[in-house]
Image 1 (cartoon, rainbow, N blue to C red):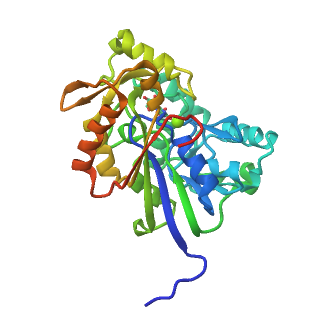
Image 2: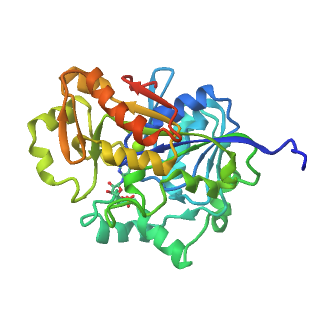
Image 3: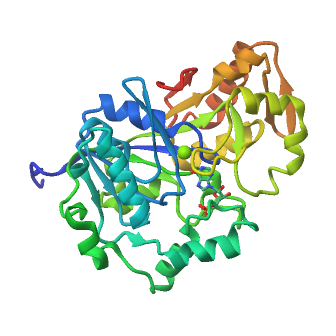
Length: 342
Ligand code: IMP
Ligand code: MG
């Protein structure tokens, strides 16, 4: 047997989105960072197209790129699979510094790719209208990366100064996902997807073996929402009065773009698939309070819209199919009705 050396990785926990982003991952990673005694909190994909809302001591913070470990004094890593806009990175650093957080904890992999003004221009010109991108230059940056014509953070050592990551992961690691399963480049409704891998297996690009993964937290809301163009979420959803009330009551507008989200009832078949393929061990279902407030208890299953009289019956219905379909890995289901904690 080989001996374990002291700087090895103990375990990795991952939090990922199971829908189209905006599932409440920020809340989950924030709480895990606070309680989990992690040595690192890392992002593995995407850039400032993401938006995390985090409450620290009752105060609301919004970040787009920097992992939430920084709010709890934990080293926060932007991994090699991420793309980085230097201007918004610096803006976010200043915002965190002004709010009293230790920004020396924030590190960027030398292999992360840099989003340039040209990438943003191209995104605005070609993809904002057709795909409904966030117009942050994410797709064009990944295009250059895979064409092997991109620029990496290492080429910007001067600008990034002390923020270049130069050590190995060790101890306890938390990886925070961006976007969600159905925005993944391979699983989503292509081309209405983001340009990176949002599934948890991709977190291994940070530099650990899959065997190190302990828990996979999957975040989902009790109803579906979508920003950006997607034929699976047609415009007529905006006209449905009941869905409109959910959107209003749930304050469904994007943290990054401010756009109104389209709302639909939860598609349980899609949820099952995303849980299974992601290997979710702990499921966090958020915003149950919204449906309770409105007394709307419905979800889609096998193409039918099922209606229930109360939350308990609705949850029992969902759990029955999840127990049948997802019990191989799924061990825990938590329902959350609090925007600040799980
Ligand atoms: P892009 O990632 O900006 O290229 O956008 C591609 C698609 O993903 C669009 O439909 C966006 O609305 C969506 N998207 C990207 N990031 C997020 C996010 O953090 N939350 C929700 N949707 C997102
Ligand atoms: Mg978000």
